[in-house]
Length: 176
Image (tube, rainbow, N blue to C red; front, side):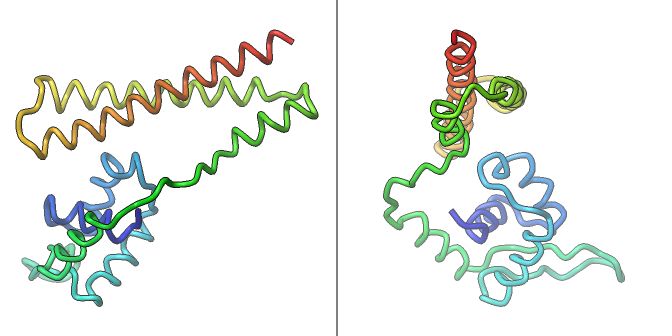
């Protein structure tokens, strides 16, 4: 995925300013694709230069936030990108390499790292569970909401799996 497509998605859902996007990004897409606020603002400028978004007229005087909306060319690019075939993405997980290294040079203090990671995954799982309780108290019926819930469920599954993995690794390391 690329940042331009994440921003086009967010702006297609709802037009907004750079700061609005940064806040919304932190609460939704940002769980799956990380970007700094500076990256978001730079990318908005590129998207505007490409003719994919436009700034809406500002109300009032100076210092007003520039709000953006997606243009037909931007929507077309987003549709093209969504339809683009994607292969299996390679896994690049530092923890897996650390565990392999632990197997040949250990024992080390990797248990501490695993405990911290498990705690972070538990915290994120709790966040996702709170979002699910807030946004999906009932099973969604609309297609868009079902897809949004599916993405959230992927996050729930991922965090649960990572917690279990860390716990398994800790148990193996403690057994020796």
